[in-house]
Length: 142
Image (tube, rainbow, N blue to C red; front, side):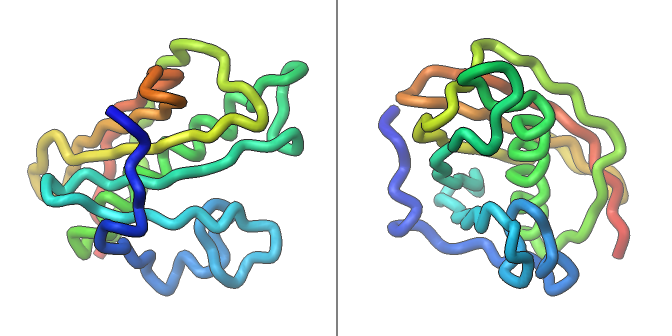
């Protein structure tokens, strides 16, 4: 599967309380300014160009950044459904090193929901090659 052109999809708007978010905030000067969009199957996508400032080990994106990217994708999956929730549990599987300067794609979707709990999955890939995956439990806040 080729990288999704998010411009052809419906944008997902973050809630106003996320304006200062490090990953998607439009009022945070240090934000990565991630823009998420949703397809017909309710899968949320974002494209992101990694850079050297996100480095952990030489030439590789820091594992904590990878976790944050996957978590943000799943959060936006819930925003798309007008659900505000916080991460209760996050499990990440690091499949391959994520190179700095890579063109990355994030995908996230809801696996199951039993209000107030939501179970989601997310993937981080480059050129259709899975680099990391996550599953998480979210707890509705509102």
